Image (cartoon, rainbow, N blue to C red):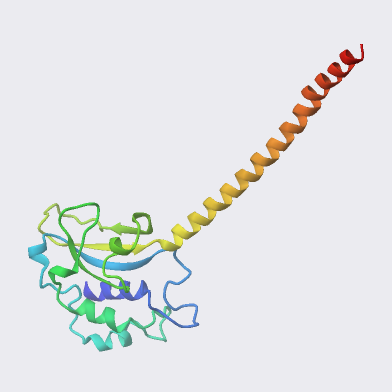
Length: 197
């Protein structure tokens, strides 16, 4: 399980760099992983380690960033490696969905908790479905950065506003022209004729 989780983390690596088009998920998706944690009671999760792999943290990059493989993940940032291999503490808490209890986890980006730095529409929280209903069993929780999608939505919204302004201005000009030609000009001619009589 740990190797699968690590492979997924490397696949979602926001720190991946390089010119190789295979590096990271850059440009492939409009969201990237930014926070990983446990969805469980806080007292059960304090002291737990998210990734308990037998191999040393320093060789994770060598294992999961193999240049000869079909997919190159790039190296993980040292701060993230340190966070992932360290035990969870009570100050690793993030609160989502306006809940009173926080969920313990680690950030894989610079910020400590998505809801402290981002608006609610700029990140998405995902809790994978499990086959048990026991609330004491820990479940993973992932937070994804959706800022690129929000930026695209904002640009499209601005373009829509500009388009509507152009359409309404054109319609207003055409309506004014037709009103002058069909209503005001005949009335003006009638007034002129009456004045001449």
